[in-house]
Structure formats: C-alpha cells, structure tokens
Length: 462
Ligand code: FRU
Image (cartoon, rainbow, N blue to C red):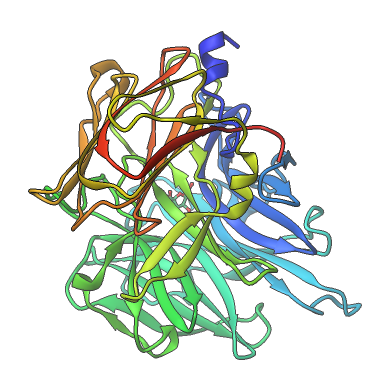
C-alpha cells in the first residue's frame, strides 16, 4: 500500500480491507457481541455477485473481520444475497437457547428488462445460535407472495417484534413507478402473511429501498430511501435520499404517510441505506453506508484496493420537536487521545487526518476549512450551512450541499482517514462525506466566534 493509500484507511469507521462495501445489513447485538454485516463484493473492481460480509465487536470500536459468510448458493439467490436485517429471538432455539435470525433478499436475474420481467426477488432466512455459524437457507417469500401491481423490485426485509407478533417491511416499486413499503405479519417470524402497505399521499419517488422502523421513546418512524426525487436547491440534493416519516399513529396503524413530513437523515454527499437496531443497553443505534448508489463521482481514487465504508454507530434519540437526533455512541469518545486547542480565529495544524474536533458556543457566522480542499460555512444572514469542495481534484465531481439551519451553536467533526462526519447542534443534523486528503498534516482553518474549540487525536486504544 502506498503511504497515501494507508492514510485513507479509516481507524474507527468500518471499511473492507479489499473490495467493495455498500449497505449495512443484519445489525444486532447478540449475547453481548455487536454484529455488523454488510453488502460485500470482495473481488471488486472485478465483477462479482453481492454477499454479506461480517464484522463483530464487543465494544463498537474494536472490530474483527469475519469474512463473507453469506454468498449466493441456491437458485433463489443466484445473482446476489441482497440487503436485509437481523432479529434476536430470546429462547427462540429448539433447545430453549436464543436464536439469531437473518433475513435478506435473494436476487435472481434473467434476460430482459430488470424492472418488469428480468428479475425475481425472494425473501430468505438463515439462523444462527452463536452469531457466526449459519444454518441452511430457507426461502420465506417468493414473487407469488407480493401484490400483483408491483414491478420485480421488492427487497430489503426489515423484521421486528412488537407485542408478541413479528412484522416485516419490504421496499417496493409499483408498476406505475411509485415507491412504497409492504407490511407482512407472522406469529413465528417464519410463516408470513401480507397485511397491507404504507404509501405516501402523493407519489414520492419510483422506488423506496431499505425500509427500516425506528421505535424510540414511544415514537415510531419509518425510514426509507426514495429514488427518483428531482433535486432541489436545499432538498434531495443527492441522487437518492435517505430519511424518515414520523408516524404519530404508530407503524401498525399507518397506511398513508404525507410526503411533506419526510425528514432527511443526513445532508452530506455520501450517506445511504441506514439501518437501526436496539442494543442490550436499550440504545437505538443507527449505521449508514457512506456511499451513494449509481453516483457519478469517483468513490475510490485509482489504485485503492477497497471502496466505501460505514458511518460510525450513532445513537438515535428523539428531540423535543419529535424529530430524531443522531450522535456518535459514547464508545467513540474512548478513542480520544491527545487534545489540542484550535484557535477560533485561525484554526490549527493537526499532525494527522484522524481527529475529533469540537466547537461549542458558536455565535453568528462560521468558516471552517480542511486542507483548503473541503469547507464548511454558515451564514446567519441566510440561515444556510454549506459543505463545499473547494479543490477540483478532491471534489471528483462533487460541488456543495446546502442545509437550511436557523442557528449554529455547536459542531463536532469526525475526520477519519478518508471520511468526514459533521454533527450539527449536538446531532440535530449530520453531514457525512468521503474526502481523500493528499497532505500529511490536517490544516484546519477557522474563523468563528465560539466559547471553545479543541481537537482530539483519534484512533488510540479505547
Ligand atoms: C441499496 C441496495 C438495496 C439492495 C442492495 C444491493 O443500496 O440497492 O436495495 O438490496 O443495495 O447491494
């Protein structure tokens, strides 16, 4: 690995050592161990079919790479083990032990157009009693089990338990090019009956990928990734979006959502397909893919052996306004090493690109630059926070993202090799972006009025 390539390897974001990563899958904590599966294509840049890669950890910061345990092996997943979720069933095993169930979409491709006849999607399950060794695959739902007005795009099962019953949502594309979510119900998490669908009042994109359900503090939210929303100056700025609908009636009583209530989860260039799970401490934890499907910009510089990474695990809470907040899990704080002051009127030179930078008590406008390549700026006059690439090479086709923001009080910026996550106002908003710096040191320029500004070197032993 060249020194530059080594510099881009994240220290606390999950990335494959070799090959391609997209969506996080099967997130859970089982018998104390955190499991993060992900969409993987280890032969990348050579073509290959998607399977599930696997990382495991006891503390959300030290991860073990457990290879690629789920790959296509049956006719129903011949062309890819696509995204899905995990369900921990306490006492669910035949011997009364606990059971981990993993649900995914088996993708099958045929000759022809992938929307109307050239593809099949099957929902498949495997189980595990130790989180590592997996059972035989069991096909749960086939095309005949979906409503007849859909295209061949039906995928990404998210399964959860509620009041002793099990539920599954699937993302779907209707034949009239409207995205929606299908809801299935089960008494045993194996036999599923179609229960209905959740749709938006007016069409909101042609496909909803990667549905998820967030249930926190008695509030329900439906997460979806709509595709096909035309970009607007301060909304839907990425090719595809990731966000949520608040569900005041609860997920099971909802059949329609108002598309004007959709809230974007992240405002950076690189964020998609987030998943959540509840850990054994009762925290709702979200991890997203720091990437964008079909993006027209370069996601890995030439010669890099791996492509894409995941966000840090973020704890999700509900704000007073009923909207979600995201904040790096406290375990990330344990990686903070040497602290260095950052001058509000000048900035700082940091010896590396692994930093946790915190600005508190910000007032008025702010300008913050990173190596003269990436810039954050807030204007109190127009109430916009901008994240912009100011260097054409670093931009590799990206320009700027604009976030409407009433006021800026706090910023926390995690820089990790080739990732930047910006948490605004203690997690009210987040911007996640890949950035491949070329300098050895990190030059942070800052012009702001704030009570305190400091940076910790990251990546030490937790
Ligand atoms: C989202 C997605 C999912 C699909 C997976 C395939 O990025 O398109 O809908 O299951 O990726 O890798």
